[in-house]
Image (cartoon, rainbow, N blue to C red; front, side, top):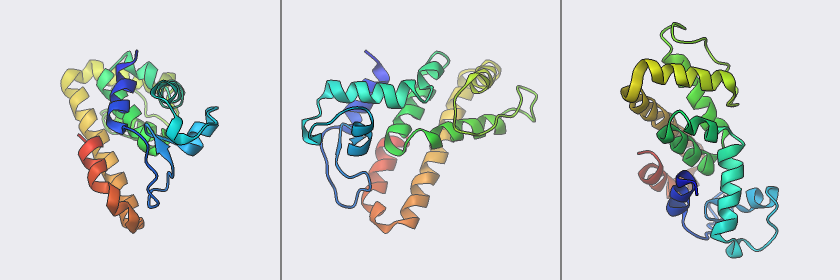
Length: 177
């Protein structure tokens, strides 16, 4: 079992269908559209924890490359995966790349990354170089930086869409820690 996926399932809980939520019907943190894209065709209320686990692991752990990041840092991989479940993997991946660029001491630690939202060998090498240079303190600072980006994202989408005011407090309470 994957403790990251288990942790996300514990935070996400069960079924919801709030009309103000753009995600629509959701169960275990999985929207109906994501469930369908991953082969689930049943009623969203009937989505089991085991089915949700498989979808989360495939769509939000393996595909975006967070599994590879976990070999370097469990805490960074959890942060990225948790954010991806809530908003999709693109933004968390680009936040990581942008922060790694900002932390690379004017390319003394590694070359700047193309912040394309794709976790590949260059991003993994940059993260490994950063962690080797900065250690556990650097890992903590990178987590804070990722949380700053996530919080700013939530503020932006709430200012753009008033209905998100129903959710922003909970997003910050449960996701930006």
